[in-house]
Image 1: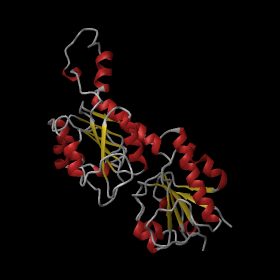
Image 2 (image 1 turned 90 degrees about the vertical axis):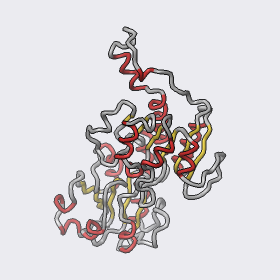
Image 3 (image 1 turned 30 degrees about the horizontal axis):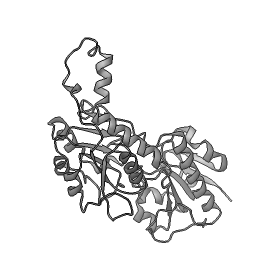
Image 4 (image 1 turned 30 degrees about the vertical axis):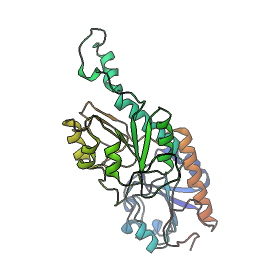
Amino acid sequence: MSNKVLVYSRFPKAMMVRIGQGFELMDTAGKPVSEVFAADQLSGVTAMVTAGGTPLGAAQMDLMPKLGAIVCYGTGYDGVDLAAAAQRRIAVAHSPGANASSVADIAVILMLAATRRLLPADDYVRSGGWSSAKPSPMMRPQAGMRGRRIGVYGMGEIGRKIAARAAAFETEVGYFSRSRHDVPYPYFPSLEALADWCSVLMIAVRAGADTQHAVDAGILKRLGADGHVINISRGSVIDQQALVAALADNTIAGAGLDVFEQEPHAPDALTALPNVVLTPHIGGHTLESHTAMQDCVIANLEAFFAGRPLPYRVLGLNPARTQLP
């Protein structure tokens, strides 16, 4: 029985080494699948690995008529057309919680760097401004963490870890999500109410049609001139054009972003602003996270090829194939 697995997204080779030890990988290197493999090669593909944010729609699925499993490397699966997968009885799986600790860590790093203006401070030393006592408006005293109100938008595994970390800095933590959770933080009935209350808005919600540009000009205005927004979720959750305007005219004080509407993100108006801290989508990019995500990918693939239910199926989908046809 074939154990060929199509690698649909572009991954560094090091990430695929462990997976390649158990399966024969057909690597597209991130190129359109039909440009890399002929139709007869694709006709026998039954399982694939993809990055959750990579667009994967019905047309691509139809190139692989025997496809039975789409396994996402990471917790996200927003790029996969779930309705198309369900219609074709294709199981979709991911790596829930595998990188939650690392992503929560980067959220706190971005929060501290943005609120304490770490990058301007670094530049102040490197440029000689400090040694020459050069006045700098960016070096004015900023509010510390004690007593700050931290709003967490999304209370899944990552949101919970962010909240716990933020609380350790003597802050007040509140949250908004689609439903209440059994957590020791006050629940707000809407994102608007949360933005009115907090001074740092942490975005930890899944990407989807219901969260597209949920943080728009109105939400940013509610945060106020002392407010900050931190996004480690998906770039689509923030209206990036509105964010650039809010940062430029001081509607809000600053931002920390690990994700963007277009990735990789090229230099533009956003990158030119001094009151935003930017990282290249590295929230889950730690050795421990990659090992955990690979564990999930391997477990999902092994279960599929053995005809067992996938252990990390995306919940809420219609019953799908869990074995080879």
